[in-house]
Length: 162
Image (tube, rainbow, N blue to C red; front, side, top):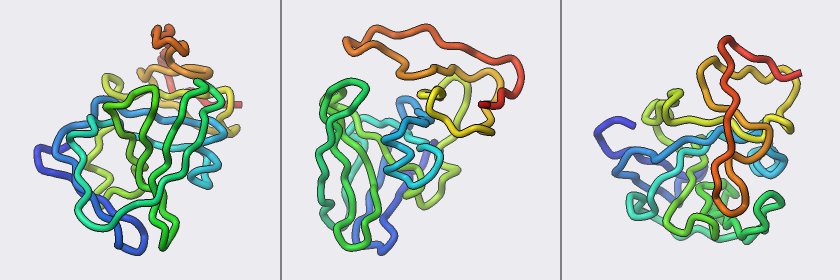
């Protein structure tokens, strides 16, 4: 993220937010939840400390969902007027918030690098998905339910999911 505050909003503009710190990490997730939630092949989700994120206008509605992977509560915050999903909060990480990157006013504010980004749930990824070299990848989650990190696989060249 650039040094400046980054902003985002829903499709209709009734809900807007600002983030004033860099992402702690970025998750590129291909799980079925993220596919259904975005209507696409997955989700790019920068994770921030909740204290760095500030609601500027509006008040989102919240949908409670129990994660099939962790068994923990995930809350989807969305605009009740246009339906845009804006961010997730997590029982598993109560001090963190995950933005739906498509809601950013300038998506280039979030830079994905091998140091800050991991690709998860590749076992659910669409055929033809391309994974850049040098990034940490996981067939499912990157950690066990108790938070123990799992070892990543890192590809030396572009990897295509088949």
